[in-house]
Image (tube, rainbow, N blue to C red):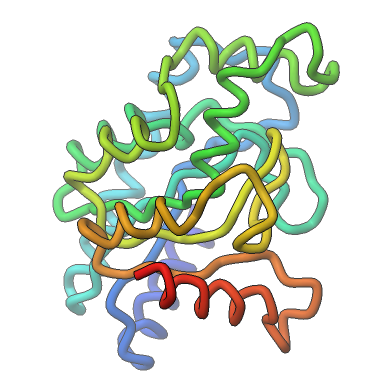
Length: 224
């Protein structure tokens, strides 16, 4: 849409003015439910995403910003307690496909989102809530990523930066550094060998103080 085009233009201008190194975008085809997700829907959504990603990448590169694509979680809460589902943009195969088809596009790996995706793949369909059952069934047919190390290995050739926060379950994203399922010290040390930047991205109870981000920054420095 023209509105989305204008958002990219304004972000590119803002990025240039503040001296940013990169911009970040998601590839998401939002739905209120996942009941119609299948391979055909996924292929169509990937194809439909390409023209906009090409425009985004071109606009970024014109002002020497690195265009990056970030993986989305299985449930996009949008930091507003919403429940939004997408057939694309979560797993390594989608990310590498879109980067391979878009000149200059690199990856922002969100560690928390990746772990939630992995948790959904390994969840029991019978034990998740009714709202999540169609999504979990779809993901288990679409991918076989074993763990976070496996996920990283599949995308690291295109990796530019990583967002660092912990995760739990299928919807517990952006958790404080030490409050989740991941040993982020180990994860950070691996990612630091390939990523240009590690960015703290915890969800904050008080964004103006960003206490969890400050803690995460200190923990990252210690780990590295």
